[in-house]
Image (tube, rainbow, N blue to C red; front, side):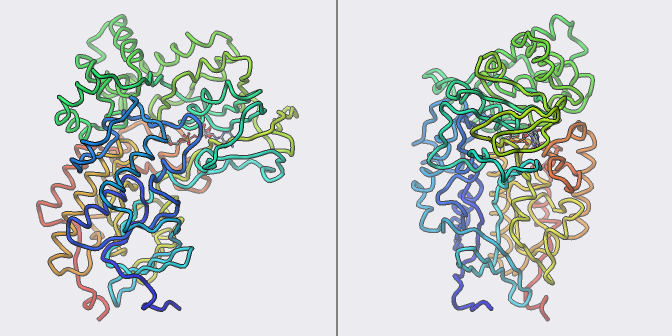
Length: 553
Ligand code: NA7
């Protein structure tokens, strides 16, 4: 039994010290409440602490993958590259924590195992693996959408005699791949970034390719004086744009602004030659935004999408001339953007190196891992010293279900969401009073530039907290009807997109048994922000309030 006197008592417990959690702690203090972040890892950074594989880099431009809420932070931090590398993002978040004096309210190396709501007191008890226990009025889950690694279901992994690494659990001291025979399973964002970074180091790199992705060049570079001057003089306008961009890549303002005339063009009004010219310009600019935004309706109109998909495939064929290799690397059977596009420099070019081999595991699947390598269906064993699993995540719900969260009457979040996530505006859940989620399912999260989207949610929750709890309300949760309407709206908007046309983590298809539901809100940031604003204007309509005494009595 817990001894309440041993638990630490705060107004707000925030789980996770990534982008969302750090900002939330700052906000909680601004409101005048006490807050504590509990973080499983040894430092700030969230996914940028864990994903430190060679080549790890953000696919949104640094200048907009940044906070806006703090003038000091903005004034004192300068990014070095167009697309920030993992180490620099981690340094940025450590700098923010120091500059805003956040660390004194963070407990590191404490993994939250349970969060239990007590209706009698209206408080949550938060229990960590290291023995720490907190009693809190409000629980905010900033656990990140891409936190829990997914290992592939391949028999024999434990029998492998060499070293194995998952990209999302890369050792802090690094992994020695030099001169080794390395097998890479997975060619999503992580695998396609890692591959060119290690291709010259290793003796041999065997890349096991199941579903080839659409991989766009980043054209990463050092930021120039001209970039910085441009950013400084247009900052307010560009940040406002980035905040309201509909989908991922919306933060790519540097490339994007040079392409002002190429935006939401009606493909039907262009000749074939003009379309090719537009797409070529976007390809040369690099990054995801230009191609995503050049034509209207690429996300929703299969005919428009096919034109862009075919263009990307033609660019792959420009680099890869060997027909067998080209077949292995060409995405087929699903449209561009149904899976998250990868952004990596040098990916296709690396396959031309003598040290790299591509193994088509659609044609010749992996059957098992054996002590000295990976065995394929034709009986061939690829001999390996190291296996790198770039095999993705149990996205969006995995990090929430990793905690045993129990709301009213002991109901478990994992049970409540068995058929898919149920939220109101992505932030609140009926039967889980005073529990809020940042960057979670039912919010735009991973299909937008997550940093400004998180900032929007932090501001929204800050207002909600200030206008309810500070006015004496004990409990706030999603109204059941409002939640049901939001879930329906999420599904209706998802049905208008092409997300269901590929087996991706966006829809839970990479985890056996996970319900096939489009997890993020796909209606866009503008619609999302409007829905939140409409609720706030009506006194936070859709949230119900009560007091703990009334509930327990
Ligand atoms: P992803 O995008 O989920 O990619 C995982 C990759 O691993 C993908 O290519 C999978 O192929 C592959 N995979 C998984 N299991 C297997 C097996 N059993 N055999 C062969 N290949 C396998 O994860 P990432 O870490 O790259 O990126 C996740 C997000 O992080 C990214 O979108 C950014 O938002 C940042 P499949 O496609 O399932 O055939």
